[in-house]
Length: 321
Image (cartoon, helix red, strand yellow):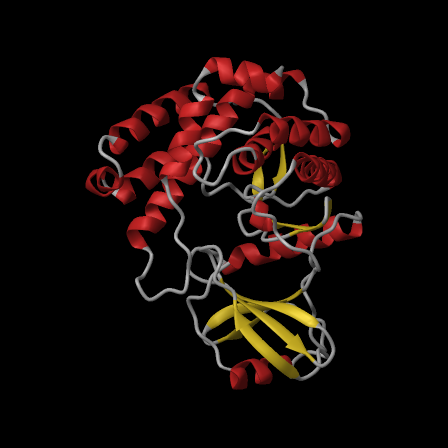
């Protein structure tokens, strides 16, 4: 989450008139993340998240996200709903941006997860994949394996090497490897594709919500697991791997959506792919984020360190047992 488009209380109060949501009490921008502009909204009736969709989110994709969250909510998964207005409409505009009012879920995002929290997150991810087995709408993964080389080019060799000497060549080599080893025939389904700790709400060791589905797409479930593993099982700098978090995450996941043999065999490739994807998008944001954006930039090299870890076959063997 982030703030690129700044709103005043008068604008939001007028927007709320479309809804049976009460009168505005407080409004606060949310600085975490890099994708959309987000505000915490408290009214006389409830609390909400107001999201304005910035350039990286295509408004044509919003019906997919709406259908996905409705499907998951109806299946009993802990996800936020889009709030409909007095006429049943869920999508509007404010300050020239597409905008939605979204259900507020209680809970906090942990910064130093423990093994029980990792296991609960793995279980929630497995439950989500199981619930989406009969979800039929599709959305291509615009940040999948076919996009990584082009994204590296947008960062430019000089930009990448400015972040770390030799990074451009390292990324090119990894693109070569992943393009030649990426699975071709595993079944696909809807995935979250961005289940970092800040997208999981918790009370104690229990998951109370999975949020921020704006990278959700159709891809391999094993890749979604790999994204989550890379996000949860290291310290923020990517320099320390936590085996207990890895064991917990995989135990929880397999309890609800067990990996089949082909997915298990491909997991090492998925893990490296997950690292390259976030290395590249962090590099892009590091180079291109506007100086005046109220946004927290994230260190790209934290994912280069993870990539190096997953590239060691001995580490993969230890993860898989």
